[in-house]
Every structure is written in C-alpha cells, then in structure tokens.
Image 1 (cartoon, helix red, strand yellow):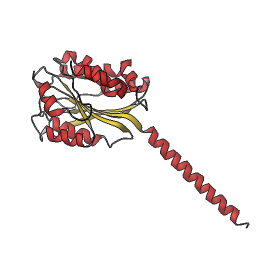
Image 2 (cartoon, rainbow, N blue to C red; image 1 turned 90 degrees about the horizontal axis):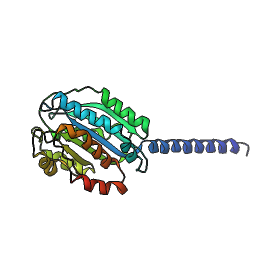
Image 3 (cartoon, rainbow, N blue to C red; image 1 turned 45 degrees about the vertical axis):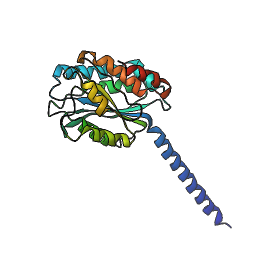
Image 4 (cartoon, rainbow, N blue to C red; image 1 turned 135 degrees about the horizontal axis):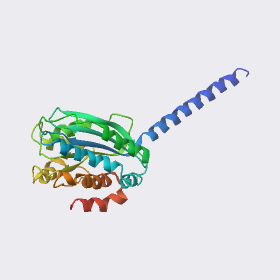
Length: 246
C-alpha cells in the first residue's frame, strides 16, 4: 500500500509531463501555421538592366510597407503569412536573398521590406529558365518553420523560358503537388510574353497573372498582385477576377 502512492505519483507526473510535451508540440505547430507560404521569384537575367532590377526591387519594398498588404494578411484565419525571395536566371542559377520570414504585424512587414532593401543583386545573366525557378521554389517550401494552408510561387520576369527543362513539366509537377503558380510578366522586351505566361507558366487553384507593359509600372502591379495572393477567399474572388483584366 505504501509503495503504491509514489508509483501513482510517478505515473501522474509522467502523464503531466507527456501532456505538457504534447501541449508544447501543439503550440509549436500552431506557432508555425500560416495562411500562406509565398515564394517570390525575381528575374535577374541579362535582359534586366540594373535600373530595371532596382524598379522591381523598389516595387516589392513599397508593397510590404503598404498598409493594404498587411490588411490583406489580416483577413486570414491565422492572420499571418510566410515569405521568401530568390533571384533567378538560368537552369542552375538561383540565389536566395530573403529566408523564410513571417508577416503578421507592422513590425514584421517592415522587417521584410527592410531585408529586401538591403539585399544586393547576386545574378546578372545566364539565360532565362522559368522551369528552373519553379523547381527551386518547390525545394523551398519544406524549409524553415512555417507551413502554409496555401502555397504559392510568384514569378516575375521579362522573358519566355529559353533554357532548362520544359516549363510545362515543371509547372504541372508543382500543380500536382498542390502549389499555385502566379505570374507577373513584364512586356518591355517581349510584347507577347503574357501569352507565354498564360499558356505555359501559371497554374493551380486560383492561378492568375498581371501583365505589366513596362518596368516603371511594376510597383503598382506587384502591390495589386500581392493583395490578391494574400487575401482570404472572401476577399480574393472579386479582386482576382478584376486583376485578370488588367
């Protein structure tokens, strides 16, 4: 009898420890759950001059500093998203410039904008492989601490896929894995690039693109696009329908 009490206490202690461990694990999972994992793939190929590259960069900086983006984030269930960014050119030429970062309030949105602002251009040529960009983006989703209810690859560029494997194969594999690919084709070099993105690049649930006629209009386009990508379903339906017509 006297020995059963400590035994029972040990059992209760172990049960409490297990419960606490389970609660901590559940909390950790909750802490890393976001509404969206968003990969931003930015063209740094030879056709993109430094001036044009800076226009792209400033567009993303301005977007994450715009309160409308944070308002879109707050429409989700977890009121948070995770973002990463890399530069891309040829099939094996991609460089991560922003690791996975969470956006959930003004401070974290500003931190992403500041990180983009401080990131240097790491690539200056090597071809145009959208398929390579998609493949690298797919490798980024399992990394880091965040898991999104939705996973989106956002590709901006000024040229069609000219190297690497067929872009449709990369796209179809990503879509089969439940990933959406959206596009932001810049028509300054190839006026019909929007058709290439429409037919060969974008795909997945709710996929859309916004064609930009020149780099100078990139900032407005990326702001509209990010809002549509981030916003919850109640908001995004009408917004996406409108954006497809731009």
